Image (cartoon, rainbow, N blue to C red; front, side):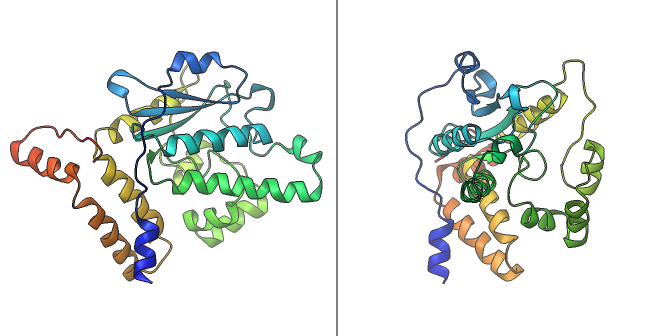
Amino acid sequence: MLRALTSALRLPSPRRPLEARGCAANLAAANREIQVCALAGPDQGITEILMNRPSARNALGNVFVSELLEALAQLREDRQVRVLIFRSGVKGVFCAGADLKEREQMSEAEVGVFVQRLRGLMNEIASSAVMGLTETTRGLLPGAGGTQRLPRCLGVALAKELIFTGRRLSGAQAQALGLVNHAVAQNEEGNAAYHRARALAQEILPQAPIAVRLGKVAIDRGTEVDIASGMAIEGICYAQNIPTRDRLEGMAAFREKRPPRFVGE
């Protein structure tokens, strides 16, 4: 049992970086509903996924979901990506949820397959261990799996109330419930939330990338089991960090009273 668990929690070996993707080049690819933008300069290591489907308010349609899954699969293998931000290219909206107009044209069998793909997409975003993700799986990217994710976040009683009533929440209400971490006052450009997300990404960026990845795995897996099993999961994750150069660099930087220089190895 423990051996199987250790194998499941082992981080995948990083592969060579993907071909560089500049922001300007991606913004020019207006025909794609999902665009990937790797930031440069002091923000190198932060990558943005730009959702760009203005005709449907970024609703989760077939093409949108396919392109997003493709982008996540590529980013999972890019060791240069340390933090991932989801950003809307459509002013005034982040993601409208499922594309019900498109779903209306599907057969019952097609609906079942598509909802399963949506559930897989949300799992892919939530469980990725290769990068530190700014969390978007609770309320910002509505999709399949809500009956399971919401009770784990808010508790059973409140999750039932929200799901049964279909109640809409303001940003301040979502923050008060613990559904989102931050709610910010909107600015004139309409991108205040993006700037807050980018500031958070800049806080994550200088941290040891392997420790961030393993911390995400330990939290995600550990909260699904009892405390004793969670402690075992934490131990397995920490064991993977012991032989890394980054762990030694962190200790050396602390001893020498200087900023650490992590390399992700």
